[in-house]
Length: 146
Image (tube, rainbow, N blue to C red; front, side, top):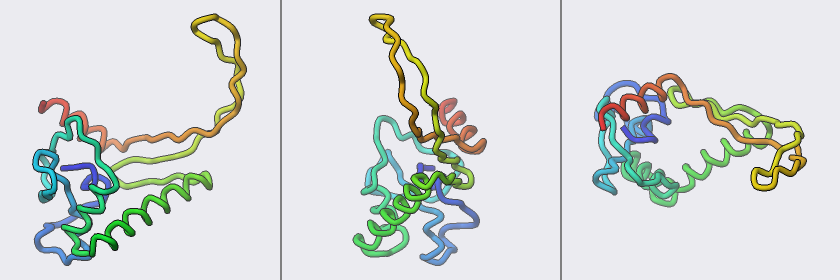
């Protein structure tokens, strides 16, 4: 199962689901670019590839039946909602995937490793991701299979 299949919650058989609900079953097969595969427990290796916005919108286009433009808008909207929530300091929890959150780091004194000189590090906000236990298990299972 690809990244998007893990991102979206899944239940039931994708073939028996209405197109609107079939969004939950989108999965990208990295071995055969441009094709989708149904939800399964075997997993698919992503290799050195990167999943992009275009890949996500193409998957929505093929699986849900929206136009390419509507699919791209849907993906953009989803990512914008997530980004806006993080900017506001809210957590973004995606069931069976993980939690994105923003953490405030206070100022501290760092050290230049080359010269040993002390350097002040300014306070900042950093984005963190904590994968769910299900995602950790799936990644670990994928590592064992290769």
